[in-house]
Image (cartoon, rainbow, N blue to C red):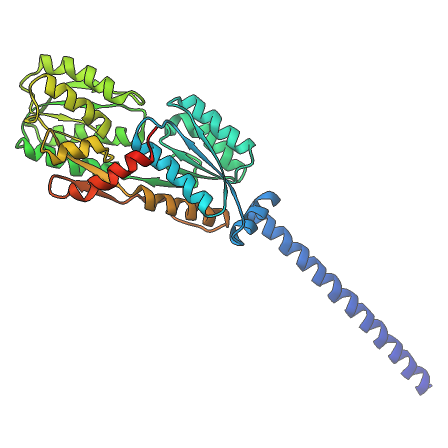
Length: 351
C-alpha cells in the first residue's frame, strides 16, 4: 500500500514538473512577442524601425533638400552647405529647386517622399503653401526640418534666424539714427515668415514711437526682389523726397534702395538696413553709405547642426522643436571681420 502511494506521488510530481516547464516556456515566448510589438508601435512602421537602426548605427540615410529659390548668394550658400554636410556624413542626397514657385515646392516635397527620403530639409518655403505636403510626409514617418521657412504644421523641427529678434535689433538702430521721428518708407512682403515678422515689427515701432510716420510701402517679391524694390522706391521717393529713412527688411531690398537713393540724390544721408550679409551690402556699410547695418547668420555651422539633428531625429531621439540660428549684427565697426568671407562665399556659391 505504501509503495503504491509513493509511486503515485512520484507520478504527480513528474506531471507537475512537466506542466511547470510548459507554462514557463509559453510565458517567455509571449513576453518576447509583446516586446517586439511594443518596439514596432513606438517606432511607427517597420520601415521606420529600419531607418532608426540605420541612423543609430551610423549607416547611410537618403536625405532630401528642397529650396524655394536660389536667387541670391545667401540661399545658394544655405542650400549647397547642407548638401555638402549631408554627403560628408555619408548620406545620399536628393536636392530640388522650385525656382520661386510655392506650388512646385509642394510637389517637390511629395516627390522626395516618393523617392524614399527618410529626412527632408525644407528651405525658404511658404509655411502655408507647404503645410499639406509636410503633414503628409510626417504621417509616413518622415523627418521634416524647416530651415528659414518658419513653423510648418507637421514638421519635426524648425531651424530659424529669429526674425523678431533681428528686426528689433536693426530697426532700433535705424529709428535711433533718425531720432525716432520722421517720414519713413517700408518695404517687404508676406510670402515668408521672416518678412512677415519684419513687417509686424515695422508696425509695432510706428505704434510705439509716434514720431515715425509711414508715408509709403513697397510690396516686394522673391525672386526679383532687388529690381522690384528699386522700381517701387523710385516712385515713392519722387512723391516723398523728404523721407527720413527706408525700413527695408532684407539685403536684396537694401540693394534696390541703394540704387533708388542714388538716383534721387538722397544717398548716403537716407539710411536703410538689411539681413543676410550680401557682399554689396557689406561693402556699402564699410563705405558708410546708406546701409546702416545687416545681420549675418552662421550658415556653415547651421548646416552641420541640421544634418546631425536629422540623424538624431531619424534615430528616434526627442529633441527641441525650435532651434535658433546664431547671428551677428554687422555695422561699420565690425564689417571688416565679414567682408573677406562674404567675398569668398560669393565666388564659391556663384550661379
